[in-house]
Image (cartoon, rainbow, N blue to C red; front, side, top):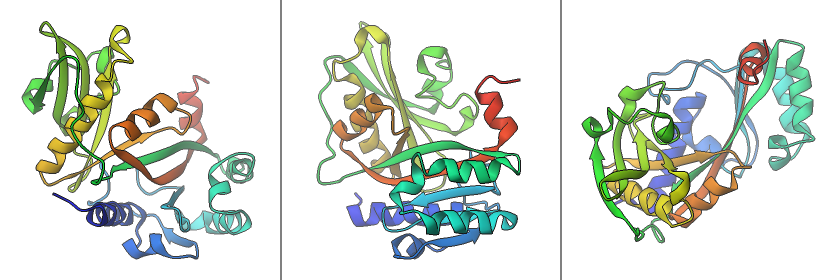
Length: 258
C-alpha cells in the first residue's frame, strides 16, 4: 500500500518526465520554464514536444515549451498569479499571443489522486466484478467510450464492471498510460445513474490498481461537475492541473470547423 506522500511523489516524478524537469520543481515558489522534449518515460498519449503545456501542483507553474515560444510563456506566467493563468479572462492573453503563430489553448484539465486516509471500497446495489484485459476486448462500443481508450486499446489493462442480471450496466477501466500510474475512466448506462454505481466502481478499481503496485489517477474538465463529484466521492482528491496549447488546425477540427 502507498502512503499519500508516496502517491504525490510518484505523480510529480511522472510529471517531471512529461515536462523535462525535476520532480522538486513542482514544489518551488518561483515558476519554471523548460524546453519540451520527447521522453520514453512520458505518458504514452502525450504528443511531444509541446508548443506549451502549463502544469501546477498549487505552488507554482512549470511550463514546458518549444524554445521559440519561451518569451511568450514567460511573460504570461510572470504577469498573472498561478491560479489565474489557468482561467479566463487571463487565458485569452496566452491564446491571442499563440494565435499569431498558428496555435490555440486547447485542453484544460484537473487531475485527481487517491487519498489513502479516505479511499475505501464503496458499496454497490448491483453485482460487481473485476475484469482483466481479455475481458475488455469486446466492450469497445459507444456506451463505454469514457471508460475505455478507443484510440489506444492496447493500454487498457484492468476494469471493474457492475451487472444487473448478467447485463453490464457500468464500467470503470484503466489504461497503463505510463509505468507507474494508471488512468481511470468510468461510464454508467443512463437509466442506472445516480445510484452510486460510478463511485463504487471507481473506488474498487482504484484499490485494485494499488494492489498491483501502481498509482491510480483520474482526470476531468473543471466544468464536468458530475465527474469531479464522482472522483471526490470515490476517495480521490484534486492534485494538479494542466493547460495545453495545440496547433490551431487540431483545435478547429475538434470544434468541427473545416
